[in-house]
Each structure stands twice: as C-alpha cells, then as structure tokens.
Length: 198
Ligand SMILES: O=c1nc[nH]c2c1ncn2[C@H]1C[C@H](O)[C@@H](COP(=O)(O)OP(=O)(O)OP(=O)(O)O)O1
Ligand SMILES: [Mg+2]
Image (cartoon, rainbow, N blue to C red; front, side):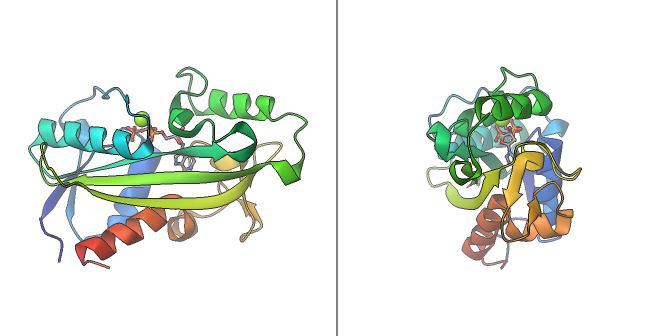
C-alpha cells in the first residue's frame, strides 16, 4: 500500500511527467508542481541523487505534499560520462535539439565501438520538505549513440540512443515499451518495491 494518497511530481519536463505518471498508474493521486510554481530550482548538486533530493524538497516545500523528483541524464563513455548531470544544460539551455546537435558534433568521427552510453535516473521521494530519510532509487539503461537522429517518440536524447536489445532507437519505441525498459522504469520498479506497491 502506498503510504500516502497524494503526491506531487517535482518535474517541469513534460516528457518525463508523462512517463512517471504512466508508471505510477492509479497507485496514488498525482499532482503536478506546475500547480504550485513555474520557477525551476537551480540544480546545484554534483550528483543525480543530490539534484533529485533538492528538487523533491523544493516541491514538497511549495506544495505541502510528499514529493517525487527525477534527476536523469545521459552518460557517454567516450566523454568520461558527460554530459551526465549537465545533460539538460549541455547546449547552454537551448533545448533538446541543440543538445542533440552538440552531442553529434563532439562525437563526430568516433566509431560505433566507442559510442557506448547509459541513461541514468535517480528518483527521490520525500514525505515532507525536511524529510531526514528520502527514499532513493536508481536505474541505468545501456545503449549506444547513433550518428543521426531516428524516431519521433519520447523526448530529450531519445532519437540518438540506440537500444541494442530492441534493435531500434529509444525514440522508435512506443511509450509503453520504453516504460518497461528505460532507466526511469528500472528506478520506478525499485521504488514500487520499496513502497510495497509492486
Ligand atoms: O528518458 C529519457 N530520454 C531522453 N532523454 C532523457 C531521458 N531521461 C533524461 N533525459 C535527458 C533529458 C535532459 O536533457 C536530461 C534530464 O535533465 P533533468 O534536469 O533531470 O530534467 P529536466 O531539467 O528536463 O526537468 P526537471 O529537472 O524539471 O525534472 O536528460
Ligand atoms: Mg532539470
């Protein structure tokens, strides 16, 4: 049983929100942080976990509700794990298309065998803004960076992320399939186990 009836999702990313909502199903009533504020907190942490906690605390403070945050990104082996926690800001806040273009540019000439990458997701759940024991769950999804975008689904770096087990990019996967396999799906599955709603 979910330990509470209502929960605020701390994300301002529409793609992420849709996936998180689909994964939570009707286990809990989901509210959006947009109901309470349009100001995004500064992500000052040095890890996905710190940023997830920071976003969850901020949302709990603004809403007075338990809050779930997701901090995620793409870690490319050939780039020493970049863009990592800076994935959303990779092209200085110019958005997904610019981030993808920059990634393709910096990987120009890098052969397939050196284009391994993983999507990383950290979920943080706080029961209230000052919760001394946030629940943290992580998920990874291994893939490879393509040489050109493919597919129309998903968001962010999905068109550049080749998923070997599906033989397609993550933007070519229907939402329901991505939501079974992704870094976010793995983290959410662990969270549900922790909460006893699996
Ligand atoms: O499944 C994914 N498919 C494609 N791209 C993804 C995925 N998951 C994370 N990403 C990319 C998008 C963004 O460039 C960064 C997340 O940055 P991150 O700060 O966690 O989210 P955000 O600023 O978009 O929204 P918010 O902080 O309000 O939740 O990683
Ligand atoms: Mg963010």
